[in-house]
Image (tube, rainbow, N blue to C red; front, side, top):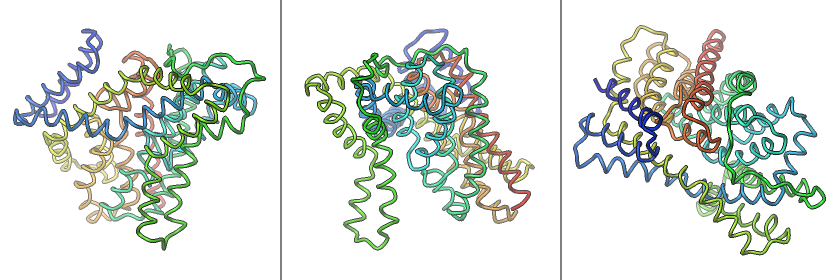
Length: 438
């Protein structure tokens, strides 16, 4: 019954935002409250779950998204994006620019959380789109596919790391097998699938649309690349420091952890950009701050929509529906790797959170790993692949893609949701092929 309620609430959400033309944030609030009541959460806990979900989701993303929008706006307005786009096209040409962006997404996706990587790379994608008049979804999806795969499959991302611990897998082997599985999945879901999407209409956010600048007045390519990717470089460095200085003091470890916080990294990057691409290119501080204010206005509704998705996710999580679904599936007579993937996939579709889907499934399949002697590293990857299945209206990532690329819900389902499904299925197939030799 709970499964039917979840599906019904998702259908209502879709109808409210498409047929009813209701503001997406309001639709999320209404459906979240309705879901809490129908799933028999105590009435005094419904709004608590809504508020907690909004707070938890925005708490981890709002600083990053806002600072990312500021950095992206300045990179676009200063001409740095124009310079980078020109260099990419000169090096790879329109024919191979997707592959260049995909490789970039894969490299930065290993150390970065998905939301951070998304916000950082969107301005680069749009600079290529606007500068060379290429279809936005066609250009951007391969990079985002790479970010998604690294988020779901590869340590040191939170869900794979937690799965390694719960299933008693080996971190190094999981990463190695994950790379083997990830590369084909990214290629299929990215450059190959996006060939079908050249005609999808998309007008990305205007905040990242650079104004044409005389090439003689553009910042240098080195400065443009360094500032645009400074958060990536800083996060890579701060991630590596604890492994380089293994025997450092607790105070040093705390300092490394603080310096590696995405919000701190973004703040440092924006400050550096302010004095290099901002005042360093002849703009007044007032003009730079006005640019930042404009960028925040452009992404205000995105923040609210992501908060709404977090509210619905929390209500579904607090209701216990994910545990009910997993318990019902446990008795199905399937190969353990397929069963782990299927459990995670169904929970993901119902709940919207890849992390919750992965961790809920891990608790159920852990005994199967011991009983059936299936390779725990492969089980981590199978569950991780399942947790990426068919992202749709209850997932914050779905709405980030929709709003940044300014797509209809229909086209977001045809592009983003299908891409995530391809990633998930290709990941399972890769794991099953690997299991023949491992």
